[in-house]
Length: 298
Ligand code: ATP
Ligand code: MG
Image 1 (cartoon, protein in one colour):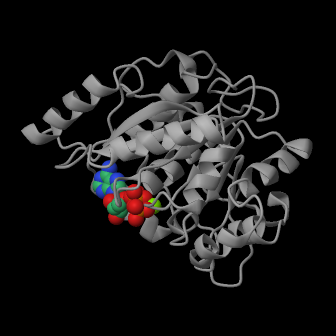
Image 2 (cartoon, rainbow, N blue to C red):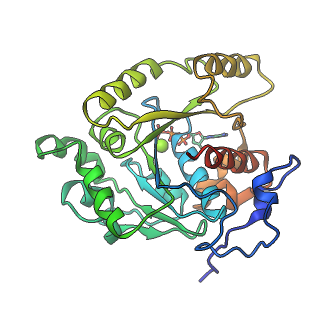
């Protein structure tokens, strides 16, 4: 059995000065007392959504979750995608028959019954998704309060357990699975790939967010836009980044996630880039992005 990982301040240190990480001289931080990253005053529930496929939703969800965990914060990642890619990347079993998000949504099971600890970072828990969840999209249609199943489960969870962060990884669609996450969350993080058609679909996503806000969850805000797979050698990447910053000047993170082989290799080892190759440009970028997100806590 490998030793459980501990929060690590030095992981957040790099060439730039990062005051949050530098403040603490004791690296052996007790998770329950002190943290390297600032602890939010209340749980932050963040849904990672973009109905465009392959833009880096899962990669962002797992690496931000792991980085926050290494920052000493408690994190629950809820895998809302039948592909179960987030469960894979966090080294969590999600073979058919494993109980997780499906049972929470369809059977009314409690999150606590099925959430498992990931060995990828301290304080990191995962509610796994299996391929069974693919059927949930249809099965939920006839269920009473079908878009409120997750928010009810979160309320029950929070009666006994407060995570600093709850992060939802969504499938590339705006169906009932994503809707359940949007109703349960407070914040949305949209990853945008620095490629052609980057903003394609974002208008539709914003319209959906607005509908959810007006009808189902008035607390929902688009808090964060993250540029992913940035390739500094191409003018296209720079153009897309500029365009996104023009549309979302305050929401877009300063940190940009570069296209990185290490990032794409990590899941095949059941790892995040934070544990696989944190010194790589990609690993460092996700650590920086997590620190930036944590610093924005209200
Ligand atoms: P889906 O819509 O299918 O759920 P997604 O939006 O979750 O996809 P990811 O699975 O995170 O996207 O990423 C898509 C592919 O791109 C994956 O193979 C992933 O490893 C790779 N990838 C993501 N981010 C990077 C990056 N910064 N550099 C290189 N490859 C990346
Ligand atoms: Mg995904």
